[in-house]
Amino acid sequence: MAAGDRQARPPRGSPLVRRDDGGPVWYEARGDGWRAAFSTRLGGVSAAPFDTLNLSLSTADDPALVWRNRLDFAAAAGVAAGDLVVPGQVHGTTIVEVSGADRGRGARRRTDVVAGTDGLLTRAAAVPLLMTFADCVPVLLVVGRPARALALVHAGWRGMLAGIVAEAGRAVGACGAATAAVIGPSIGPCCFAVSDDLGERFEAAFPGTWRDGHVDLWEAARRQLATGGFAAADIVSSGLCTCHQHEFFSHRRAHGATGRQAAIAWLTGGM
Ligand SMILES: [Zn+2]
Image (cartoon, rainbow, N blue to C red; front, side, top):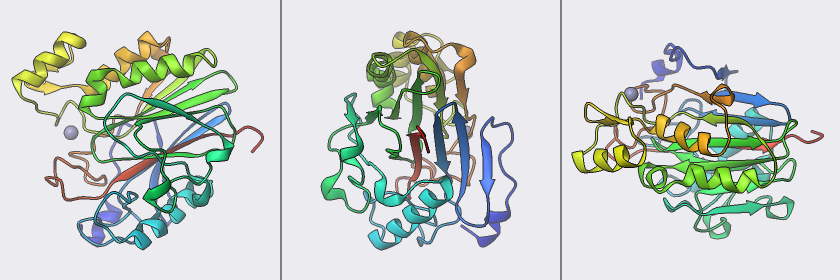
């Protein structure tokens, strides 16, 4: 990516607030008792093809550079990188609850991640959850006002089809009434061309999500959020497509060789 891309015009039309204070460039969402931050690929230290704000230790990037990026992104978002709770993502539907005792798991190294899960849930304040993405869909689910619990989900097409967002809705719904949800930057219906076989599977599970050879993962997420009691007015979709908006990493655009952006979400409690 050319240095000039840093000055590229931000994508239009997102309800999230774009933050660019000279370091990592990211998008902010917030509500009563919760906050979330979605990174771009801009403002980090990694070299190509991970340039520059790669936040995943599950790539061939230098782990020291990923840690530097995590430090900077977390600081910009307003949390300590050493407190981040990071899962070992497997494209499944399991949701795991974490608490204050889990702070720091997976933050610096992969050996102590919360293994085998694509959904983290917490009822504890100041436990920042981090997940990484490069086209897959970040979904945040919040219950209570002020927030009593939240769940952060990594939903690729497999997890979306298998119902991980609905599963997260059930898990977090046990802690309170649905109040807010965010669908973060990810591959949009504009770019997610699929095989007829996959399209038919989505159409069967979520009618209307397969059109002109493309699947709308954002709509599939909305359908699952609705089953969890999230009203349409409470769902914010970033509208940011990682595949054609080049300030993001995209697995599809890069044919696999790329970095990962991240979502961080946490309950503010008394913070
Ligand atoms: Zn697109």
